[in-house]
Length: 343
Length: 173
Image 1 (cartoon, rainbow over the protein chains, first blue to last red):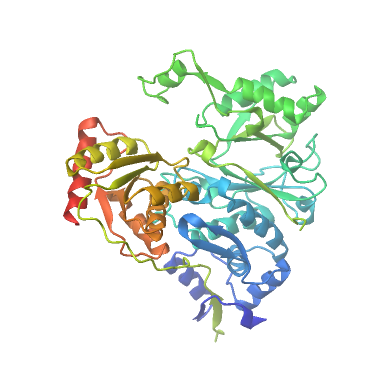
Image 2: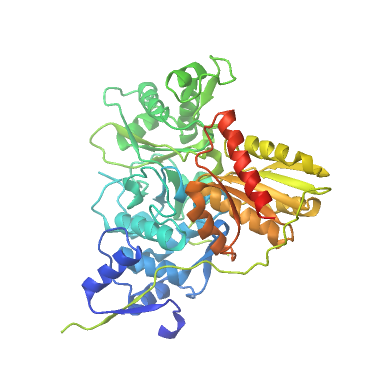
């Protein structure tokens, strides 16, 4: 099988030399990597069940192809386990769909692709869906997100500072991967609304800025909680993208107790997340000579279904999180891919 | 003693396809000139100002189009339409990392269809334009470079950018 891998090989003295190589070439993210040896990469390719030269996605803006072998090399380097390969292949299929606009969301603005894993895969590979869900401590979240980061740099041109000209970026550019709670989510999984059968596993990719925490611990009614979440949405852009709202378990329970479906939550957040032109001008978000009536209402999203709602996080405090979208707005659409597409 | 380690290269170069550049016209006289606005703020204005500077050459028609998505390559139908109708195309302005490489790819797509195309980028984006051109198989693709920035300029400064672009296009003939 060794002969099937075609990546250039570098012989280095020892583990430290591997780290030096990744630093010198700009292949890494600044943290130590796992040496992508041919043996390890072969194991990962084998776990994917695909041929190493199979093209999983293409990036026309940079005339590039993403193959199983290259995805595996980066997955090894990121510290992934081989059983994550199906997630990474699905993620790459999703990221390279035209409507996601991977090229521009990678090199400009302030976003990183957030991966939301949903369905049985969450338990199968132990994805954190609970406390500190955007934080460290879980191999799957940490390394799947990191593999995506390395893939963006090494296969999609997003080398920080060279091609990736983000002013700040955000910490999620190291790793940005969460799981949807299988216990606290009162509704069907996120992917069920997005074309994948409810009982399957899927990954949803979303070009997201850093999470904004929306805390409301005092109310047990949906209204005030939704007002808090909608208020957190207002700092987003007004360019017609989709917002991802991660309802914390306590907030989700409040909605469910009140008999709200996910679509009701979406409709209510859509209705509330508006600002007047006068307000946006006052905040410097629009120029003073904006040719629109001062009282005109501008929405963060264009339609209720553009508020994606998932459920995750710890269940001790009343928090939700809002993930604002890329400045390009409707130029990037979230994409959901089944882990195991039916052929 | 430690055992040497073999590691695999995690990067993939662009799939290079070389492209034969089309000869540029020595004048726009009698030609159909396409103006492909990439949608960035002020790009439409600066292309219009540039068009005015070519007016005395007496081109036959202007074909003005705007891309539907700033951050993606232009739809094939739009490239096909411009290729069918225009003798020469000017596109821009690449003034950000996302749009610049797409604009360069659009220009090279037009070259592939036999239409000489000038691509206008800003000075901060030359490296990115060069990477994009290399990825598309034309590392030496000639760029029309105007001073950065572009998006928030007043009309006077915008006109200066058009002068810069005009001088380079005329100078390259």
